Length: 246
Image 1 (cartoon, helix red, strand yellow):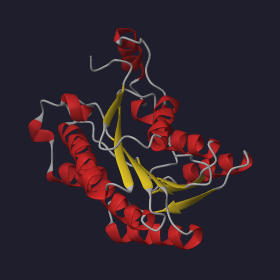
Image 2 (cartoon, rainbow, N blue to C red):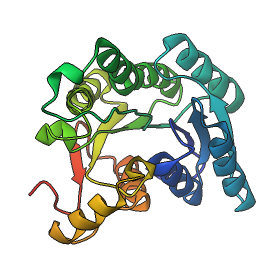
Image 3 (cartoon, rainbow, N blue to C red):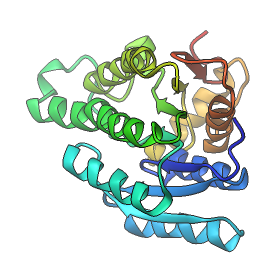
Image 4 (tube, helix red, strand yellow):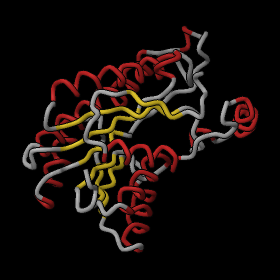
């Protein structure tokens, strides 16, 4: 699929991997809608950078964990642009809780992580798919995590929520075939603001990876675009981690 002139929604598109994906899509000629929940300034910065480089972009606020807000967001995009072609389901949250401290995990942790990381991706995919059907084709990329493969991560609920995203990807791929492809990119450690305050840990990790470097948001964004362009794959869980899970 040629991404030029496609209409792309990137959730959580104001920072980190989402921002890098928004830039990469715009560089390939897509019109980019940058979704944000609270990061309004960052989303506007992303939009301004794209437009200053000659691209087309707009920002739109919606909490992906609230279905009515997601539906309203996609309806607004569809009214303005005629429909969606691409969705990068990137918006996610985490909690930093020692894995072995089960008693530290609260009901609120479970509910908030599942609401955003799993239900939010489902809501966005459902609303986007209805819009994509107008164009008779589309593509969705969900952002998973190696935490969902290894069970290790910033917290137990986070790891479990990302495992659910991997499963959601396969189910959506079956449900939306043949017109809409759904795949999942699974990053390992990525140099984003999630590592703020843990720079020394990152420096210790990098030399022990087979490729000896931490992935950048641009690395992940490049793979997101490659998967959106490739019309022969769906339901795939693709790991990008510099060999971290080997």
